[in-house]
Image (cartoon, rainbow, N blue to C red; front, top):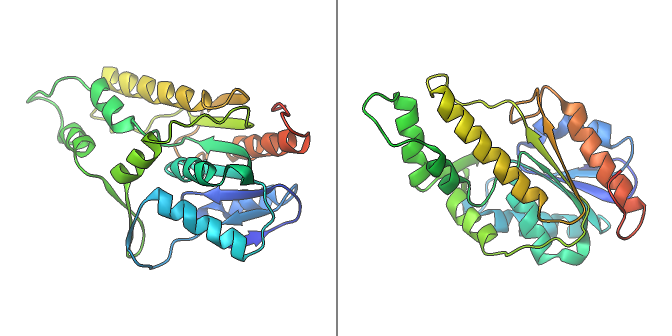
Length: 245
């Protein structure tokens, strides 16, 4: 864990590689403290997001980072943020979900795909097969993430975030292989947008925005990521029940 900047509430950046967060972290440090986490060889070498959430909690406690926190979950980091909140609800003041994974995404993407045909491209065949298999994601050298086990952990939460300040930012530019037919692109995009709307529905105090020009990494519009985080920081500083400006 590497922390920098000053101010409260501290922002915990979850998911993705630590190095990729650096430009965002520098900007957030202009208005509050941030902490970013890196995965290193450990035992077991195959983790779930619940284990990562508990590891992150241990690190902030050992590092004497003052609660409550704002959790920023990118991609599968959304799972980490939600599991952290379930285990330590009194320590979470707000949340930002950045093109976050959804616990039912594999099943919903499968439903969005047309029946298999002999004419479809190999990439589509492989994608369909991957959705039905047990996905293991390499997140660092010698460290992998059990995606399906992690999704199951989130699925059992039955989570209601109450009026927790929540920003959901969704990438608006899809990155499906070119050989996917246009109607498949459209159906998958709509399925993803519907899942992102589900995530926004976790809190009665939420705002959902689409970064129309961005792919999954938001590299094209990092300012929208920084703005989303700052808006939740402002809501938290406004006091209990503060609405997102």
